Image (tube, rainbow, N blue to C red; front, side, top):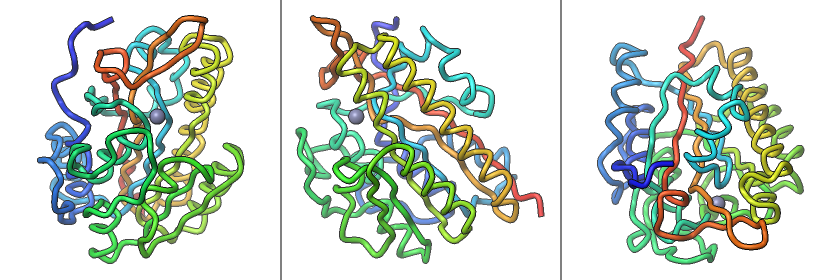
Length: 270
Ligand SMILES: [Zn+2]
């Protein structure tokens, strides 16, 4: 396991997603992630994507991916770009997802602990809406993502459970109406807290995340053939084991902060 923190901050993702889409980044976003911008340029020869599907699992640490690569086989088989990044502090869900979709550090977007107020600074959703894009967020009712980006002119689909979230995501992809879809699956995080990051139940949920991503990717491949689409597998932060065989996160250390995002572009085929 690396004892160094990854050099690139998670705050670089937001502007890179906007670059991929060819729109202006939110007002307070950090400069765009160069690896993702270069990948977009290379695959599309200077063109931009017109669709982004972000699959957001929760709490999958870089060290877990490196120790159990087969649990994420379906992601690794499809992704073309892996970006090591450093989550923000404190490394808890609303703080990190706040940075992911504003491109701003916690003291700027305003969530600095485990609370879920609506973010009032400029976000990627505001930037997308200004550019005429149609956005949707899917997650469970109480999750951070479903709550901190409320009050925008976009579609929210709060669901009861993971199966319902992913079924709705499939429905939206088939409907072919949204330009930017964010799908949250918190099942690895939930089990990891109870049985530890390497507990068999948690590793089972990791595999479930991998399959869910693959399912959505295959839906995009089949139904969004008229669109250049960026598909992402991007978690918020990592995790570590604590006493009693449980799991946790939130600390300033590589286990909790080092993460790897995975991306692939599906160019339009018609
Ligand atoms: Zn989280």
